[in-house]
Length: 216
Image (cartoon, rainbow, N blue to C red; front, side, top):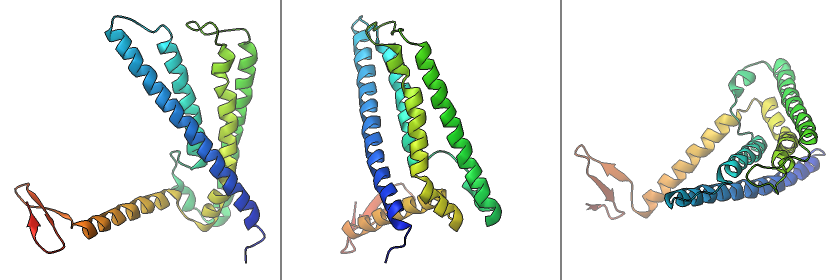
């Protein structure tokens, strides 16, 4: 039987999955578009031509990719951190420290979103230099939107993170163990298909088959 607290966490998990999928789509589209723009720009320059908007638009797309990617990393708790120091503290100290850390992160990005909104008001009427029909407010809207998304992703991942902190479980160690387990499964699959690759002192290698014969 599920506990009374599981339905809200289950709902948050479903919302987190939807947000994660949407952010992944946005990040992938931005990466593809940015790559295509850079390639086309290089080709044009090789042809002694130039796209006047390439540099300006590419820098904007890179900024968008940074903000949306940061929100996605926050949802996955993938930003660089040192939870070993936090988890080494006794639980009565560890939990308040974790709560203070979360509060500081949310405060910072709330401040960033608020200041970004104020910047949009100042930029009213401005347009890009190379594309005069594109308002700067559109390109800079990623600042308040990115701040709000980061807060949303931080809150959506908070219940799982809080359970880990209470239990003294390291998120980084979980990731390392998951990667190790994945590599071990791949190695076992290779052994089942044809055997591991064995290297000798001369640099040559052979794959041992299931019948025990060595293939050159």
